[in-house]
Length: 193
Image (cartoon, rainbow, N blue to C red; front, top):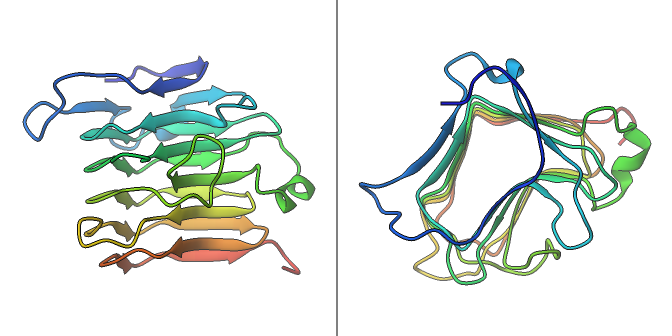
């Protein structure tokens, strides 16, 4: 469980043996506590993520604020160049701190990115059973940007109950995915966009 507080620094999960359906990894701030459990980091030129999951499965982040604070900010980046399956982001607040909305015209600002590259959002990745549920995403070029390889194995990705506010261009963009499920997402753009 994650205690109340602000935690500064990137969480880069890339090597972890033994994760499975019965041996999962969960970061949980506790129901209703997202605003008081804050993960914040400045992205770098090679790692835009505050939280980055690379080719790992069975990881959950829930009931947390996940904040990107630099000029390269993807607060959540799930990278599946090989495979990143059964991962969940749930009941999180995802934002860019005090970054002005004028910056959101750049693809360097996206709330949740699923891709097959560490720095390219438009490289198709391999994802199955990814769940993005009941998150509040505030700002960015896109709230959710997902490039998923079209394959019968990349199925059952779920995008449900998310509230996406003040995006510059896309509320949600999903490219080439097979068999996704979308329900109860609410999207609003920046005024005039």
